[in-house]
Length: 295
Ligand code: PSU
Ligand code: MN
Image (cartoon, rainbow, N blue to C red; front, top):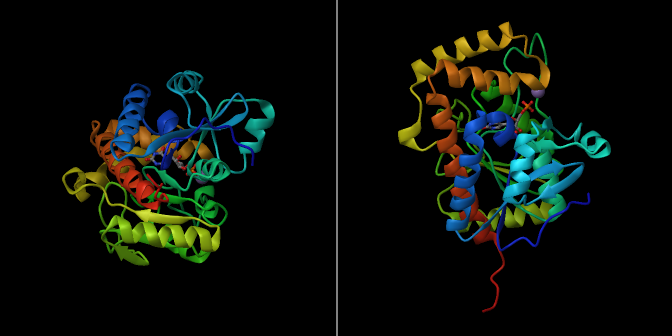
């Protein structure tokens, strides 16, 4: 796919725009984008926010392009609808699946986000599986995430990744993380404890397969939410989202928004903290994965 990108600096790290446009409240998007930018740069890597701008898939938005995107209230686009946004010349925010697609098109191999989409709860009644999962079978990008959003069926999502043959590795963890919680019942395929070893495996695997790898980075310990409080907030948020009539693609943003309200902002704080931690790890990973330039 043809992607517009500025001259990207060393060790580029893709960042998604759906998280900014739909995953956090309006006022939190800009400060979060600035923090992620600074964190990635601190590691010696180059941040590259991905989105579709007036129909042009772009990797590495300038600050004014990002402001324009956020003001435009862009549609959320997955691999199914990306081409439609391009054809219609729309502004669109990219999810994990389409950020992977754009990153791959620009040759960017590292990407940081919060949590993947996955298998929604209650799938026996109504099947809803994010296009994020299948994207790993198509695009050679290493995604650093804190597992999948715990509004989903975490164990079923882990199983779906297994079915798709997606490598799922843990950075300093043995369990598959559950976003606001450091651990779920599920496991990872392998644990890595240092970035260099992880980087050499990831580089080899992306080259070898041409497919993606999921790197799990649990939420920092001091930011983890209490399990009891979390399940109360989730029950409340699910009730609010379904009362509001959210279905399909609107479910994830609706439940996240309701959660942030029900928890008095605690889930938002945790969400922001884990995204920052993932940006830091992705920055280190991108640097460790870059070929050494002769000086
Ligand atoms: N992680 C977050 N906040 C978000 C998302 C992920 O911390 O808002 C977004 C991502 O863009 C992910 C999308 O790709 O939610 C999944 O949506 P769906 O379930 O509709 O595929
Ligand atoms: Mn869905």
